[in-house]
Image 1: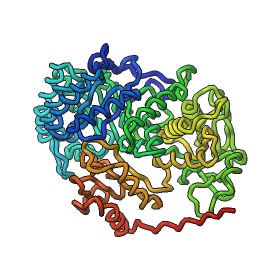
Image 2 (image 1 turned 90 degrees about the horizontal axis):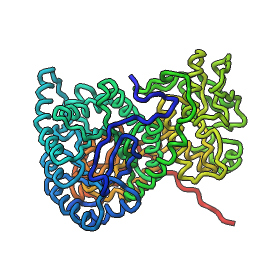
Image 3 (image 1 turned 60 degrees about the vertical axis):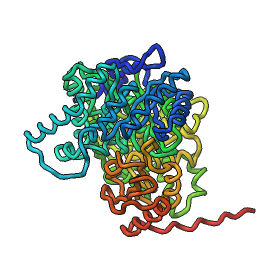
Image 4 (image 1 turned 45 degrees about the horizontal axis):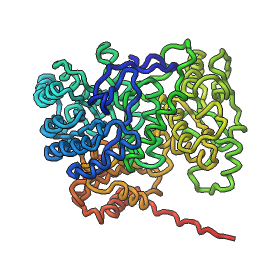
Length: 595
């Protein structure tokens, strides 16, 4: 199976064009050779027409090309008529996407008024109860027939009205039927989406796109690779566009890093026709990150130098860290083998940060680049290496983007029968002018994150960010976001939308203030139950909106406490963490003295 033409050479996947709205009057054509489309979502109540219009105009003003609005009920879906009418009256023709979960009736209402309807195969026709049931082939076929009966009316209406559909599978909301046959896996996500796509095709309807979203960047990358590989297997006419996104990425640097890893790595392999960066922040800030991220892809992907290597030097569909021997980086630190992925800094960074490191700090340099016994290799040439315990890296100045160069290094080592540990670098050359911190963050996240998702790397070095402390923390944050190392509390936080039952930004800040000192604990903060219980299945604890001003608390995907008043919920979450022996008291902050 393959998901791209080559892991060493950029070639954008050629998809069929789908038409969304009137391309001559504010609409878009997605796919083909058209630029990747940027989209975002409103955070307000869909019944608030004025605020919905205001937020849409704010998004369009910063470059948003598709605006998604939740429609949790038929009443909300009907109000899309008023929102769209007011937008058009004000001269705004941006296509609107109705986000549908659970309610086929709401989808049938929404499609009258908007250009796109997004359905989630996990809950459009199925109810999710986390039930365990074995389905024989006959029972499974009956379930598929039931799904076809529920979904076909929407397909026929979309075809009649020349609308578009988005078949959007979420890792957190697979149906019980799919879960019981495939498990909570990328394969389950793909098969769930293909079931709905086959119904579209039965009716000769092709104006649709796919999405495969997860809060875990590595899972998300695997899902999209597997989806596109299945397209190749099914035939040339399965060339549908795909929407890329890491769902519930969170806020701040963490949200940007997770999104850059998941979205950026796939864009560099030529996948993706539209993207959303899902942040627990005001929606217009998502578009800025989309724009910045898209601008980096031509610089980080190889579209110029032809590489003769064929095949993949890693398994693209099942994550497995590349096996390497354990070696000593220095007298105190080892890497490779079963060791943690280590953080290396330059001598200049060491000199800046070493005086500020306290004995118990988790964020600390573990080796200095200039002090390492390291073999620097140009993978575009033939080389010999006689010892597997020699640490290797790509030589600076090699005329390849870093992702391509390190993949090629692994391929060449594999041919030589060597498994040497590898030090990853975020860049192989330096800009004449230092990068803006926000751009350095995105580039390092894409490069190092993509390679870590390939299973490559035993140590990492960030140099594109010139600030000493910033580069050190960025390295650790990339490892945490990629699921390779945990040094702080990990948060899965959804972006707000009209379904959200509390103020996500305020509550996330409140929870962080109480829990951010907990190392190795993962907390999910979910605005509603659509993706909540499933998407936070690998979280230790969950804080989920259950009803207006009421919170449900989870341990894993198991609900433990219900309908807690919002004013008490954060402290009750802390109590729950204590009950499960995951709580430690925060250290007293050191007093700062001034001369």
